[in-house]
Image 1 (cartoon, rainbow, N blue to C red):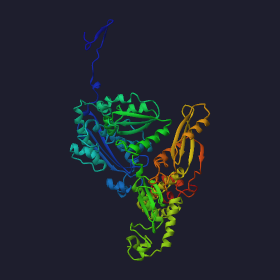
Image 2 (cartoon, helix red, strand yellow):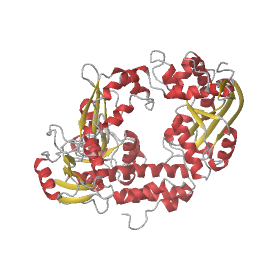
Image 3 (tube, rainbow, N blue to C red):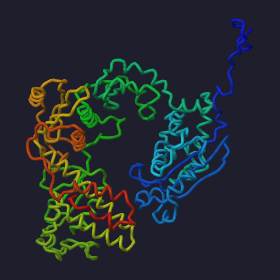
Image 4 (spheres, rainbow, N blue to C red):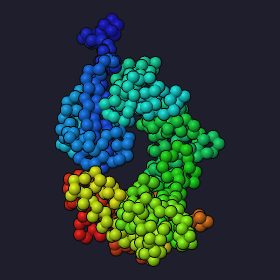
Amino acid sequence: MTAAHGVQAGGVQTAGVQGTLDDLGTPLSGVTFVVVDLETTGGSAADSAITEIGAVKVRGGEELGELGTLVDPGGPIPPFITALTGITTAMVTAAPKIESVLPAFLEFARGCVLVAHNASFDIGFLKAACAENGYAWPAFTVVDTVDLARRVLSKDEVPNCKLSTLSRFFRTANEPTHRALADARATVEVLHGLIERLGSFNVTSLEEMKSFAKAPTPEQRRKRHLADDVPSAPGVYLFEDGSGEVLYVGKSGDLRSRVRSYFTGSETRWRVREMVGIAENVRTIECATGLEAEVRELRLIAEHKPRYNRRSKFPERAIWLKLTVEPFPRLSIVRECRADGARYLGPISSRRQAEEARAAMHEAVPLRQCTQRLTLRIIEHGKARACALAEIGRCGAPCDGRESADAYAVHVGTARSVMEGDVRPVVAAAQVRIDRLASELRYEEAGAQRDRLAAFVRAAARGQRLAAFARLPELVAARPAFDGGWELAVVRYGRLAAAGNVPPRAAPRPYVDALIATAETVFPPSGEAPGGVALGAPPSAGATAEEMECVLRWLDLPGVRLVEVAGAWTCPAHGAEGLREWIDRAYDRSYEGASETSRPRRGRH
């Protein structure tokens, strides 16, 4: 008898093995999908909240139901989010909170496959909401339309995989508008378009679709040999094209394992897959410690500016708040730090944050906000013009002589004192305004004032911490290694000058002395602020702000010990460092309790 009909074995008739419908997987036509989209107050579930949920249930190309609602995030919606989505704080004031909406959504999606565009974002917020409200996250199967699009569409067809781009490509009837339900409807049509494309790859079941989205591309499989000679050690790796141009720089505690992952299905980033297709060589640099690898990565990215790295390529583009050097100084936002005698605050993460920090300072110190050139001669000849702020009493108007040079110098002195470390005037002025607005129930305006103060405190704290670190001529530290030895670091003026290891059970002092003797010579930074090396300074003068923060994070790790410190390592007594926790705590509460959150606890200054 054939295997299909059974075989005789030892006198016992055994049934043949024949494929069943279950072996073929779940046909896509029979899968119930719930396509979900969220609007939020920010980009991270750790410090942001959901403002809107939209979900559409479909099966076999037919819509089965919709769910859409605004959600009260429990605090004001940032202005830039309102500008993007059109959702205002007033719109969500009467909306249900997430603890009321979440059960309805989970019931709506029960037993279905969740679909989202850039699913890690939406699913991350939903999981965080479940954890916060005591709900177990169901074991949903999740499909990301971004992953599918990257596999079935070429770069010639679409320049990127944004929802708006895919919507135009598939000519969807619903256009994405940054509103949850509209975007979910558009994603449904994109999903259907992608499923049609999957047919040409013989993908007809849910199981095949999931594995197809994560499968390595032919280019990834073809170039696996590039990882053959990579060592299993901590260090930095550089992907290069045929001409030797650096395409991408990364770091790892195990170079071999990390580089090999680029040629497997676990690497799903579209840009990285494209980079692998161009790469012809992988160059590695072994490092003594993980800290050295992280610092070398930053330096190599800044040096080569690889086209496939997104961050750290332009450390010279840091943003600073500058108190200008002129007869009537003002606060200016600049992109470089010069040794010109000016005072600088920063570095600041973005221009918007710099503008917020400057606004907080203007609330406390009435410096002029106009950009006109102003000297005593110009004022005496009546060539300066008063601005609108002077007319409403927000500026002393030195431009037309209403405020004398000596009176204006008092404001300049206060601003200089703030930028040198005493942040009390700015904090006190902000507290008064926040308390007054909160008492008048003007919570949205109080929130704006809080945002200004937070931007200032974070910029000042960062600058003061880096400035104190950058002034140290030398610091030697050690951290326990996993093998029982020690990791060593020599830091000079904030720059990692050397890194090494002490073997297990060896006397550490000889290794420390040898590392200090061979460490890089580092010149003190000649700028007025850390991470802002003056033009014309030696390349090894000081370190970038990002490198100093990398070293400081390492110094904060458990078990790190200071071996030697040359110089005084201190922060200002009335500086911003002690206020960062207070600011972070204020963001965890709504402004219904603004009068309480607007005051730092004792001992935090």
